[in-house]
Length: 267
Image (tube, rainbow, N blue to C red; front, side, top):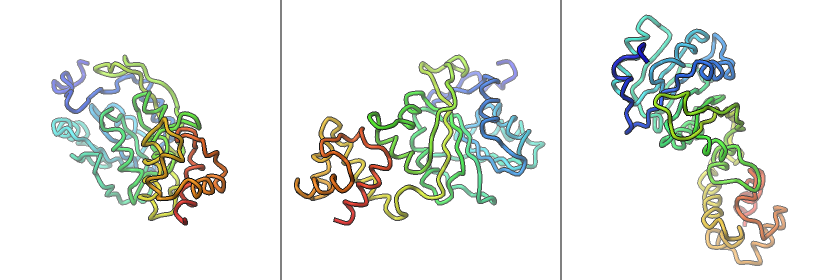
């Protein structure tokens, strides 16, 4: 770590800093993103700028979003000779994309504690990225790509906006300091529009949250209080949606949730 400034020798636990330093993993992320010279890339949590260096070698427009003000200062110094980069001191959980380009790719080594709200902020944005390439805690990554039988609220929340897949695993030793858990590289191919109708986000996720409110209960029972429908009406809803009334929330895939929401919405 001798090539890093003194600030990088003491990552801030309060910000969940684990810098990705494995050059092979960094190259895999950039190669997977298939960055072209005309692309705009937003990088979340650039840290020491190691991934940034690889991005800059391929692309003409780079925006860095960094919460640590000390790292912001160092990054501005490190990349002061580049005219195609902006370093912004901001929280990615609430930052609103302010870009000249309508299309951009999002890359980032996300802190574990903030990964979910960061993904939600960008996926739900009026200007979402076209694709996302993120390093996440393996447990979170597994939840994102889950299929029927293992679905969680997070699975639905991401799959409603894009198609996720795991590109590879990252061992703790690839980070400084090493975390206690494995990580994964995740790609999310973001849809042009979410799977539900625009304007229906509150009602769609209201049904999803109600369904997962009691994971051990049958989904019909979990939805009864939220929907205001009686048991007989809910049986008709599930029959129309072609979903067994004994199903539990984790057994539905994203298409099932879309059908269920559309039917309940019109009851």
